[in-house]
Amino acid sequence: MRSDGRQTDQMRPVTIVPDYLKTAEGSVLIEFGNTRVLCAATVEDSVPPFKKNSGEGWVTAEYSMLPRATVTRTPREVSKGRQSGRTLEIQRLIGRSLRAIVDLRKLGERSIIVDCDVLQADGGTRTASITGAMIALGMVANRLLEARMTPAGVLLDSVAAISVGIVDGEPMLDLCYTEDSRADVDMNVVLTGAGRYVELQSTAEQNAFDDQQLQAMIALARKGIGELGTLQRNYFKL
Picture 1: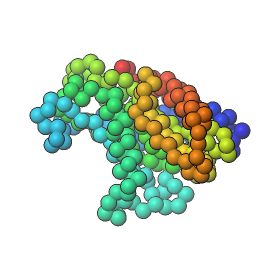
Picture 2: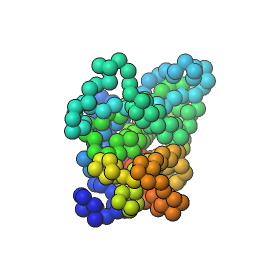
Picture 3: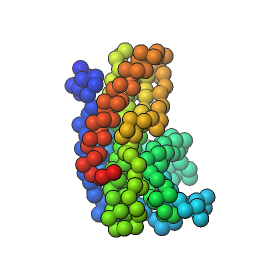
């Protein structure tokens, strides 16, 4: 049993509130336990300069954390004049994850930008962001199709992400902050709905790990992402 009473292979409760923002083309508030992320998708009838006249669209993401998303206040990055390396890494990860399941040619020369804002952080903010961003993106893709602005097949698949790790020698699924902060190994897994890898981020924070432990963590991640995929399919269609 863990500090919050979960089994090692049990996820935190996941809550999804679709259309949380009435002003966005697609939005969702997603909660993994006490981690809460607001994901909002915007459609723009333009593409970055490197995509102009290519016949292809673009999907990207931005990520930020509110100052009091954490126990102590974190100054806004705009006050520092630049984004942190962590922020840049996470928003690039979200963008890569979404582009892995989109047919950019069928999207046409338009962009979809998904903003992921962490309202409260208790571990797994990047994985919650990817999972929620997929829902917001899926809602937008479905609405573009219904409006006959794009053909069918813009979405090739879905994508979701989860954290796993080894804590006190035990492989665990969906780490909260207290577990993540003392984990021997921390790992983030991003998988498509078909079970193909988009990204694996694994680090031995305290002790190195072996093949058996790696496979145990991947098995847990597949279990968790399978559960997330089932939830996601309630909000958009492929």
